Amino acid sequence: MAIAKNQGFEIHALSFDYGQKHACELKYARFNARKFKAEEHRIVKLDRKFFLNSALTDKNIEVKKGSYSEKEIPLTYVPARNTVFLSYALAYVETIKAEHIFIGVNSIDYSGYPDCRPEFISAYEKMANLALKEVVEKKMKIIIETPLMFLTKSEIIIIGKKLGIDYSKTISCYDPVDGKACGHCDSCLLRKRGFEGSGYKDETVYV
Amino acid sequence: MAIAKNQGFEIHALSFDYGQKHACELKYARFNARKFKAEEHRIVKLDRKFFLNSALTDKNIEVKKGSYSEKEIPLTYVPARNTVFLSYALAYVETIKAEHIFIGVNSIDYSGYPDCRPEFISAYEKMANLALKEVVEKKMKIIIETPLMFLTKSEIIIIGKKLGIDYSKTISCYDPVDGKACGHCDSCLLRKRGFEGSGYKDETVYV
Image (cartoon, rainbow over all chains, first blue to last red; front, side, top):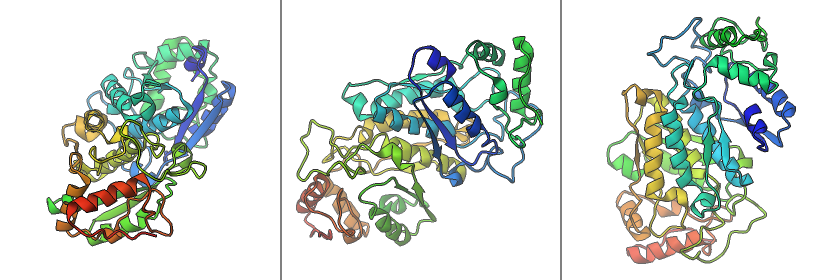
């Protein structure tokens, strides 16, 4: 959002409540949408039944402490999550006549989710440009922007700091307690290493 | 659903409540899911705000009586509707380990919706096969089945009758009153002409 704002875009922010254990991220999203003067911030409630079978959502599957190996897709993968997120974004942009959809996916220092890879995003964009009335009538074209795709976590943190992000008001943790990061899950470890390489102090609020 | 059942598939049915004026279709969907012995029938409630700006959902936009010209995409188009429907289906199939998604889109005798065309479905399928963990791990492959795509409405009706469909228990109308078809909207006219060409009596319940 900070990057889009810095590039001069008007912000219409979208967050999702899908039963994630880290639903506290929605509170931080609300804070940052205000901070970066979003025109609107919608929080969409998804049907939770569809997004179970993941350590991110299912109370019966524990979030692993420690890192995942590079070869496995972790238990924190949520079925078709980014596909559903982007599909709501498509309905949104067609209604407000926007063209650019920003999504913070990253394929470096990440957890191996298939729906974060450039080939997925590119296939999604192709599909999107066949799906919408406004697009078929050549009144608009969908561009999916992934400014974080090829950055390391350290590079992301550095850019964020330059654009005014307060990282005590964001959360990456998969298993937070009272809105505070656990410090030990895969996502916390990736973020910690990112801070170490960035030269910035880790502002994350840990339990 | 009747075709999938006839081909020997186990049925996991999916319907959507998105604020459509013809929400009575959900009652008929429930009836037919039982009749064709679906293992499960989920009705997903979508966030209605995203699907306004259409005569199908918006009280302030009237459903036109009469046919649309072949060149225009009608006001009854709903932003990104089938994209969102299919995305929920993707989350669903990955969870239950299914591979075949049936969708009743049709590109003959239809209303010109971009998300009913074969090029859209084909692009969606390509994207889907990059999106899911089970697919990337080569445990499954997504196949989007569109058995009605190239059939005329008359041909669809004939097949339905042979498979035991009771058309008094289905509705196509965009603007029904008390669960009964208006008889005058674009969708009713297409269906009427379909019955005329099929040799079957029109069983539709009209107001």
